[in-house]
Amino acid sequence: MIGVVIPYFQRTPGLLNRALRSVAAQEGQHPLQVYVVDDSSPVPAEGELAGLDEAFTRCVTILRQPNGGPGAARNLALDRMAAGIDFVAFLDSDDAWSTDHLNSAVAAFAAGATFYFADYQREEDPQSRFAQCGFRPDGAPLAGSDGTLFWCDARMLSRHIMLRSPIGTPTVAVRRDKIGGMRFNTRLRSAGEDSIFWLELLRADIKVACNTATEVAVGRGVSVFNHRSWGNAAALRTILDEMRAQLHLRRHFIGDGELVAQSRTQCRALDQAFCLNLLGCIRRGNWPPSHLVLAYLGQRPWALLRLPPAAAGAIVRKMRASAR
Image (cartoon, rainbow, N blue to C red; front, side, top):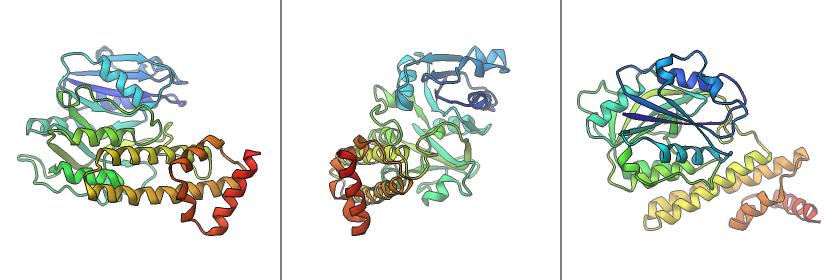
């Protein structure tokens, strides 16, 4: 049986309904149990079941929690999951699977894979995620596949994740016994918690398969990470979480010089992005909460050195003025 995990927090009706319809439309006969975790959503989950086939809705369990973010919601589903579930597939509430997604995942598991992911594309992007990341599978095609399923080396995939991850959570399916008691990091609410989870999984005895076909259409619902704007507190909060994730990952992989070097490169890019966003806040006259700025610069006090002196000076002056 496949357990489908969907964290849910949306302000627009109909998005979860679309996601659930994509689950119900899967080709093949796959026994399912769908766990929708209502993360104190402004649009309640129950109303999103309207119009779905009754036989399918009997497979849907709605769980509720105080707003804790997607990681905490996924953890609750994993904690409450029925004993008979063999595989866990993740989906976000504003995304939709292609009709062959679970068929492909099941084929990969039948070939011996324990971790599966596929390409995906956002509505607003001209390229798929694999193309954006320059990701190509480094292994052989799976025997009997149609030419889109490939084996991937877990170590090489870890390097990709550290620099620019090709893995979209709504494309992932994992053998449940490989997850065990592992859970998502709940401190990071806007970025990084999924990458940490995948990297920790990949450190175990994992056999990875991926699909170069696009199997998920990513929508435009509530998603701080994917649809943040520029020069505001939301952008700064996401960059702060990305930095925290990088520092967390670096501690896990301290013995791997190449991964640590990739992380340092990513951190330098985040330093520049954080400072440029601060400059955007100054130009807009919308200085963010001081705790966000102090939290970042407390971890990366040299970040301002990556800016021209005049720009760095403007930020320092604004920080001093806001502290008075």
